[in-house]
Length: 268
Image 1 (cartoon, rainbow, N blue to C red):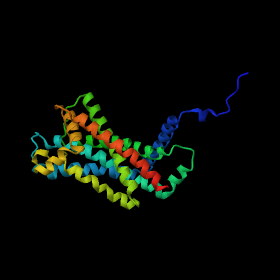
Image 2: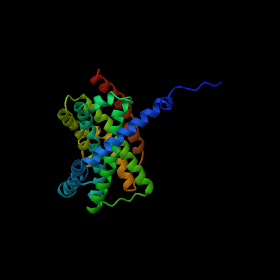
Image 3: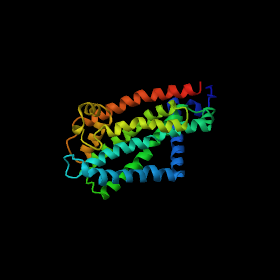
């Protein structure tokens, strides 16, 4: 006579299943929070990009020589990259806020994978990223942006934007866990601002002094911006895509275990 297993079917699933399942559930929680806080979406995802595009397009752009027939064609790829990183900075505040509000204590008391607490929040950045990219492309078209990319170029460019936002969401989560308060976490967002301006986002790197040019050419945003710009304007891409992938992979491989260490240390 065959014995009947007394282990519940749910417990027989592999651990990776529950890690993915719990991450998905907390991802949905973060998406619901986005829907229930439309003021944050309007201010951060819609209005802020519009103001930045108008400022650089009509106030600063007239004084910048880029070699492009239209400065907005040079500008928009850089704005897309910097904006998705700015949207990824939500992890700076949301993770410390959850930790101080007590919801993380509630999650840790439940039979769930603890890694999902961070993973679900970081994954939800993709929703903000897609909304932000759609908004900026729409505004860019209104102010004269004329991309020449085919379908493959658009898909590759959007894929790079999602990858960069995901990588920086983990990096910024590290900063958020290092902060002692939500207010302190907000201030740590300033650490990424030099990367925006010391890159090829707003001016050609060749116009910078040698020291700044060397830094701009050897930081993660410049190859990302160059790749997105080449893809959207149907120009030679070179090796910028692979350099971007390498940078993002390195950031993820360092940031993910570091967030786990800092997260466990906060509750040890």
